[in-house]
Image (tube, rainbow, N blue to C red):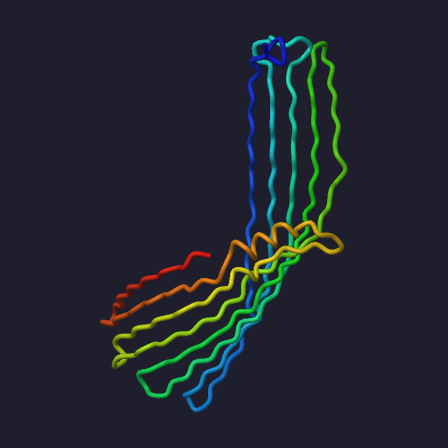
Length: 224
């Protein structure tokens, strides 16, 4: 037996999402006797995301009494801003050797969700029902992991260079927060228990043969 005595409606769902996350950097730097180079940047992160979801059921064969179709729509918009700080130093003890170090502070992104839904049903005899939810709002924040980077570079007679970089990432720093409640307590507990720190290695080389430059690189990313 079926839950409904008649069935066979066409079911369709579509989701359209747009948006992205970008970062604007304000940078500064200086050097001491061309041996010690210090730099940094303040990063301003912007988030804009939109998702539109539509679900429909249509009685194409007219097998369900008094029912033609209904459409259920959901809308979600997420906006946010965040800030971070990046600091680095390069030491050049001799002409062909560069030694570098940098830290990237966690980025705290304050996010705001605005969402709503509406539904329209079409019945026989041209009867239509339509209703909408009130707009929902939710404020929360996301904190990204801390990063530390060390590097070494070799410059060979201004025609070739080799650079190796090690990046340490502590993924347990990633956290979600919402003021005044414990909405994300289980999520954060899982992040701390299941995630760990990891190391990423990147190696690159370049050879210049004017007017061309040939480059090759390799990266190995540790599991979080």
